[in-house]
Length: 209
Image 1: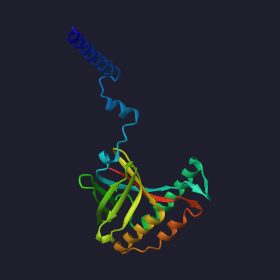
Image 2: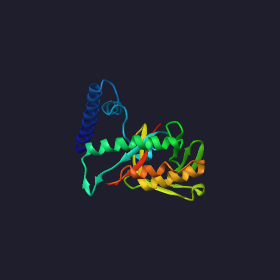
Image 3: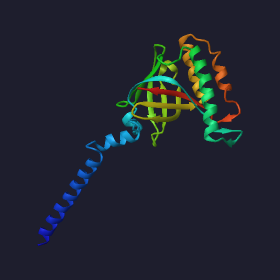
Image 4: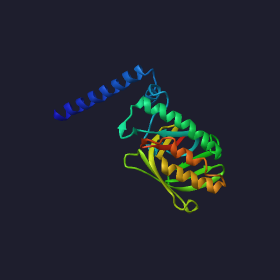
């Protein structure tokens, strides 16, 4: 008798599950849950970095972040306005080095955690490691860059990524690149002064697949 009731209960559970799936399918108009989530987020669903940080990303412009001024937190609106102004000026300076959309890309290979950062046709290989929370990244270049390391913040989605590093480290990286490309480092001095008076000044790169 107990066995009979157990079979009945199992059948009922399966029936309820099937009914729920049918109802959900009806509500979604036959679409999958993934389709539904994609529609809600504008088609750019954010995944964890290991599953999406893979392939070649092209440089789309610089990214700037400032979070404090004179030890006091500034509000997001003011910070965004200042950051946008600085981004425009940084972009102008990077263009003088030949770094602009179409001239720089990064290829990530999640299978072996290697990357190749290419600037104006110059390949700069290395390895990368993601932080435990998958919101930080450490990029270590190879011998050609004297094993230079960049550690910063990472935002990654199915179609784009943004990396942000402390401004002084980004400028140090750019100086090495300028030297390798035979370019003048003069324009880089301006970049470090653009956010004087602000703490937590970070410069990075917007990347798109």
